[in-house]
Image 1 (cartoon, one colour):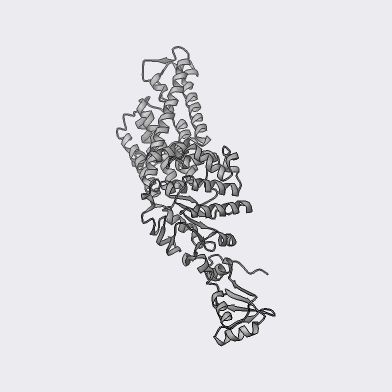
Image 2 (tube, helix red, strand yellow):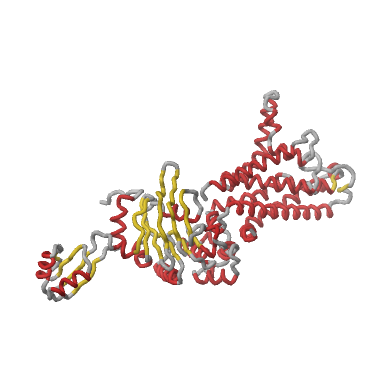
Length: 249
Length: 303
C-alpha cells in the first residue's frame, strides 16, 4: 500500500497543473478573505477570525482544488496512464484507496495553506477590522464554520469531483458537474419547486450542495443537512468506485 | 517465467473479439504475436494484464499476476506509445512508474540512457515524436528489469537503426531466460526477431508454435535442386511418387519435401548435385495465407 501512495504522490506533484491550481486556490482564498476586511468600514467591523477562516470553504475556492481532485482519475483516462497504473497495481481497490488518501492529504495541505494566507491577510488588515465579538461574516452565508467543517467540506466537495470523474471518465465533467450543480442547477430546482406550490419540496430537501452548505453554515432549520450531504458524497464515491472496479481499463 | 493464457474470451457487446484463446509464452524465447488489424491482439494483451474484464485467466509461473509482488519486477508492459502525461517530464514519468519496485534515481537515468532519451529526460514528452514515445514506453517497461516483457507494436514509428537496436535488445533480453511477447505488423522484422509465433485472426487462434514450424505450413515451401543430371533426378523422384517441376535448364523444384530426403535420394542414385537448398515461404506469405479469411477490415481491390 505504501508503494501505491508513493506512486500517487509522485503522480500528483509531477504535473504543473497541480501547482498552478493550488496557487490559484490560494490567491482566490486570499482575495475573498481580504474583501470584507478592506472593502469598507461598515462591512469590516463585523469580521472575526472564525469568519475569516471560513473563507476557503467557498465554492469559488473549492472549484480550484476540485480540478486537482478530478485529475486523480481524469488525467489517467485522458492520457491512457490508467493502464500503466493498473498494470503496476492490479488490485483496483488499492488504487482507489490510495487516490482517496492522497486526495485527503492534498486537501488538508491546501486548506492549511489557505488558512496561512488568510492568517497573513488578517494580520495586515486595518486595525480593528477583525473583532472578537459576534459570529463574524461568513462569505458562504449563514454562520461562520468551525475549522474542521471547512476541512471536511473541502474534502467532500473534492471527493464528489473525483467520484464524478470515475463515473464519467471525463476530466472536464468531473470539474463542471459539481460546479454547475452547486451554482446553477440546484438554484433552478429550488425555483421550480417554489412554482410547484410545495409539490417538489422533497426534492429541494434532498439536494446535495444545498444541504452541504446548510451543514457548513450551521443552519438551524436543517438538522439533517450533514447526513443528507454525506449520503450524496458516499453514494457518488461508491458508484464511482464500483464502476472503476467493474469496467475495462 | 512461463506465461499460460487459458481460454481468454472477450465480448464487446455483439462483437466476440477474443474467442477462447489459449497459448503459452516460454521463457528464454521471443514470442511474436501476429494478427491482422482488429484481430484482437491488443485486447488479448489487456486481458492477460487484467486490464479488461473477460473470460479465462493468465498464469505467470502458475500464479496470477497480482500475486507476484512487486508486479513490475514480474512484468513490464508497453501497450501504446502515447501512454504518458504530455506535461510530466520523461524522468518524472519513470520515477512515478518506479514507485512500486522502489527503483532508484540512478536506475531511471540508466534506462533513459539505454533508450537514448537522456538528453530529453527533463523535457515534456508532449512534443516527442512517435519513435521517442515508443522509447519512453519501452523504458517504462524495462525499468524494473522484469521477468516478462509484453510489448504491443513497439517498432511503430522507429527508424531502421532503432528497429535494429530493439531487435538486438529483445533477443538479448530473452537470452537471459526472460520471456518476451511482442506484437507487430512488421512481419519481416518479426521473422528476424521471434523464436515462436502466436497468430490470431478474428479472435481465433490460428497458430501457436515455433517460427520454423509455422513457416513450414506454407503451401509454397519446396526444395530447389540444381544438377547436371536434373532430368534423371526428376525421373527417379517420379518413380518414387514425388512430383517436381522444371525451373530453368538444370534446376528442378520439388514441393513439400525436405533437403535431407532429396539429398539422400540423389546420393543413393549416384546423381551429382550442384545445389540443394530449401525454398521456405516468408513469414508474410504464410501469414497472409493463414489469415486471409480472418481479416476483420477488408481492403478494396487496387487497380
